Length: 123
Image 1 (cartoon, one colour):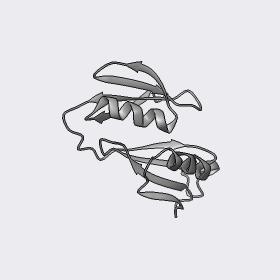
Image 2: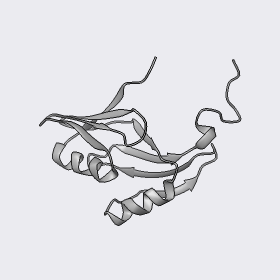
Image 3: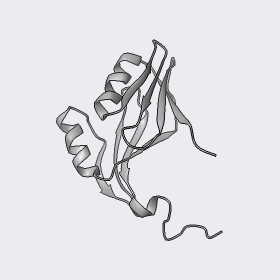
Image 4: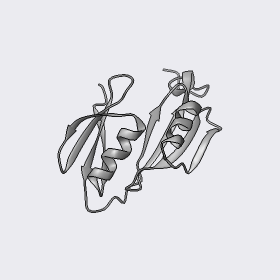
């Protein structure tokens, strides 16, 4: 099984598309009510769906091996962060921001700990 995509609800499609393009994602589908992006690394995609409201507890994670530099580049482009890159107790380095609709986003680097943390279940 493979995860196809994650879809985030947004309240302003134009503003959301511009935001995610600024983060570096490639727009591959663009309609007034739906947009889909290819991630610049790997084969993953994610999409946006125009909704009336975005009360959402989901968090979307985007991984990058040069997290600190990526965050610096985004700040230079005007992206605001809630939390700058910080080492977490679960061995990931994360920066936190929100998209224009309030969806929580974590930019992170976990390296080997993403799939193989010291506490991984042994099968």
